Amino acid sequence: MAAVATAALFGLSYLQVVLIAVLLVLVAAVVASSLRQNTPSLPPGPWGFPVVGIFPALGSRPHHAFSRMAEKYGDVFRVKFGSRTVIILNGIDMVKDAFVKQSACFAGRPALYSFKQVKNGITFKTYSPSWVARKKVTVGALKGFVNGRVGALTASAETMITEEAQELARVFLSKSGQPSNPEEYAHTAVANVVCALCFGKRYEHGDQEFRQLLRNTEKFRQAIGAGNPADFMPWLRFFPNKNMKLFKEAMESSTQLFDKHINAHLQTYDPSVIRDIADALIYNMRENKEAGLTDEFVLECVIDIFGAGQDTTSQMLHWAFLYMLVFPDVQARVQREIDGVVGRERAPTLADEASLPYTVAVIQEIVRHTGVVPMSIPHLTTKDTQLHGYTLPKDTIVFANLFSVGHDRRIWGDPSSFRPERFLDPSGTTLDPAAVEKNLPFSAGKRRCPGEHLAKQEMFLFFSILLQQCSFERVNGTASPTLEGTFGLVMRPQPYSMIVRPR
Ligand code: HEM
Image (cartoon, rainbow, N blue to C red; front, side, top):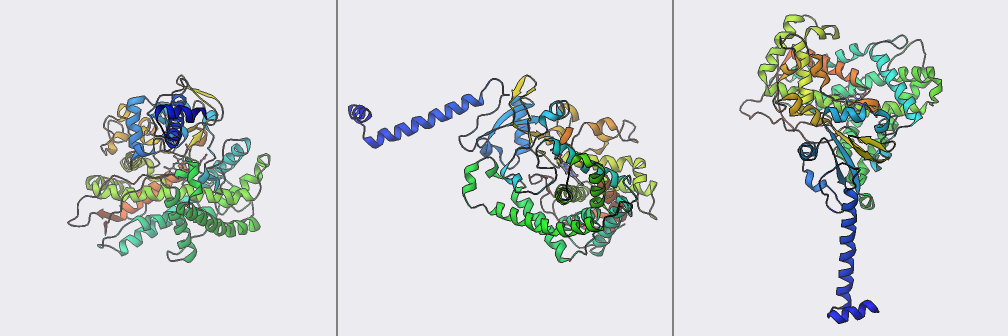
């Protein structure tokens, strides 16, 4: 009554009073939120819009936007993703100070809405004694299988990758002289390597089950490739979400498919004959009884390895062809090096890697220049944590801008130039390990990618075997394709066509 009386006094209607009251509440909420954002213990950062936070300011290249913000606010700053405060780390020192020097404090994973939909062994699970056991078994199985150090192997990872690289060269050369988009071929070849490595199955290109797997990967990419807004704006979950529907369908379909193969492995497992990564996982899991893992873990872990290991490596290959089209001189120099060291009579092997420093430097430079997994996977602080004088409360989401590590002017001088020589010593004849250490494409600390060793073997064998046999050229009369990728969990080249010719 008092409000109505006051309103009458100022000549306002009842409706106007209500509107003013609502407006005041909104203003108070924004002020309170901005005061919270400026809590002295948190690092500085830009203002976010109410409700949506920083999203509208990020554009189509968030990794570039964050790198620019780092120039203004420093290597650690905070932003709002929807209603959540998120910390962004930039540059190698900041990422290592957090992920390596305080590894356990930054090893959590947020329980994001989309992560909860994924059946997985380690990637989306948060830090806990059970996660530590899972990661130990996974790393042991991957390293053991790739290095031939787990039981008696029936085939080596190197043989499986080499066969697939030879097959890809055959497919490319069968289309010699015709323009083609290499994405699907790279995707098929790498998916086949991962399936062969994980459960010993190689598919023919037209196989129905295999096409289904590839379709599922495409759905995953569409659904969470560039992030799912509903993860940070929970109210969006009440609206129909086509991407989440696709995502769940793909998850169910892949789980069914892998389940069949993993069950067969569990039934026929023999510790004296290790056929593939699934066997290596069973072996390691049973050796590490204290980890307390059940057979279900083998399926969860294979789903993880397939998901994490396929799109990353196949997009790297997809990028590699593109760089060879755009930089024909680099391509010619790689081919000269391979001809001089390996010749044309036999395929390059991992034993040749140390004698092919320029080839390895080119792969390193492609990985650096593309910033292949630009924002890593979100971490979570596991307790209140100090970083460079700031206090990050427990359960704060932290992203590492890995793109900024490979594009830090203070380290690389001219990061935008594509210059493989930066990975060679001054004589230009030996790989410079110190330069390699300055990039972190596989992240760092407890969450570091367990597939790094395998991914490097795949990239070296595919790249060197293909360049030994094929030349990659631009389609006559077309402009040089762009090196500007499409942002996502994994950076992807924009569609392009190339012509392959036999050498
Ligand atoms: C070029 C290839 C690859 C790149 C650039 C890459 C990069 C990464 C990055 C940046 C992360 C996130 C680390 C973090 O959270 O800080 C990651 C995680 C992971 N990667 Fe890779 N990866 C590649 C290939 C592979 C392969 C071949 C496999 C499996 C065989 C694999 C398995 C995994 C798994 C399981 C995780 C989750 C680790 C965890 O949560 O502890 N990756 N990878």
